[in-house]
Length: 239
Length: 291
Image (cartoon, rainbow over all chains, first blue to last red; front, side):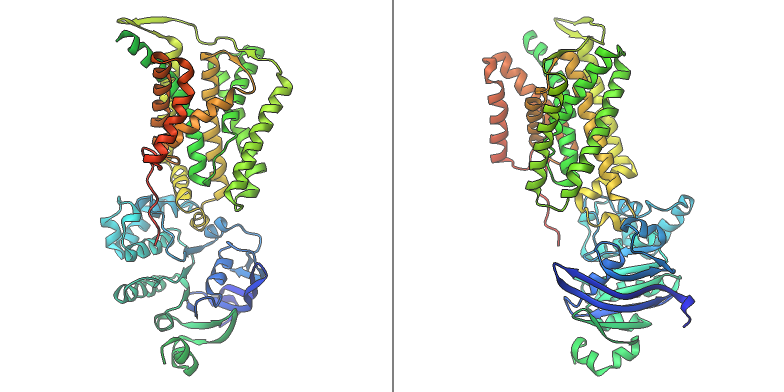
């Protein structure tokens, strides 16, 4: 792939918390239209990587989106640039209604006349959210909250969607459902960067994947290559 | 009975002032989980703005009210930026001690300019009507209606606008809000501006009802409003309104039917009893644990 296709580029990223280095100089690219999965165990630095891209924590190295260096850009303005977020643990606002959660994500949208179409799209993908649109989001089940988190990211209309452990705490049937929807969203033109402990699902949907181990990328390749890799099988897919 | 009704009107007047101030405590607590103990002193600054605009510049009521609200709102936003923002991720105790310090600063700063109590000119033509056996003054009507009007306006902002939605979102989970594209600092500034300007409005009305003001007037009134916010359920906007009226009612009735020196004692006792039986306040809910 040519450099022109690179939507999100991470170069020599390092993240530290109180002198403990969580991410030790990793580099990877996400190309336009791809699904890229970062897999790794708990504490491997996956979430730190994503939080750095979101502008939530300080880092060294370069993160560029569409060629633009993100270093000095505050987190809330990244959304306007086209980076949509599905935070770890879903991060829905339990005291707001389902509809209000979706609406809040449109804060930076300038094309307000397009909004009805986007609500319709979210409600078509997630009919449950439509049924519960005036309900407090805190009363939703875990799976519905995850759907809301994805729906919210859709409402901000990012070119790339960052998903932090979307399968966390969900029953297997819901995990499959969420991944099916991620594929569907990707087909409509949204690039996806996915961080997951569920390596099996994450690699199956991914065009490419990276394996993170204690803050370094130890393996990379296409989704199917990694799924077939004996080291990945042993460490992440239960042998 | 007539005496009771008359006192009830007075309670309504005092209660609306407490409620307006309590809103500032509760709004700031709602988004930053800190008690802005300088808020009572911002109420005092509001009263001094009334003195400057009405007494020195000879302005009528509405411009005086607006100048005071705008001036205190700017001051509130500046205090948040300078004193509280650097401590946003510090332990809450540090922020609360800072707030107490800011309060002392405001009192002593005002003391420099006004070492003696000042008297504020009356801006509302005093007229009294008889409602049956009960008399009601133009000032009482204006204080109660203006307070209720401001509270309805606030409720609309919080419940119906995007800014209000963002405030409620911040109160649930501040860390996630920027990921929605919402500028956190702007919303916090707006919250401070609204909360402190309501306190200033209360200051202007208080200065009209009790027209001798001094730099320490905000301390006790501030504590009472703080109790109102806790009684109603701190962080809960409607709770603060209800709490304000309850406290106004309790105080006036204690003063009316018991020795008036019992007033503050009963107000604080109310807080203690409530904290034992309903620590979250009347409308406050214990926050469900997030999974």
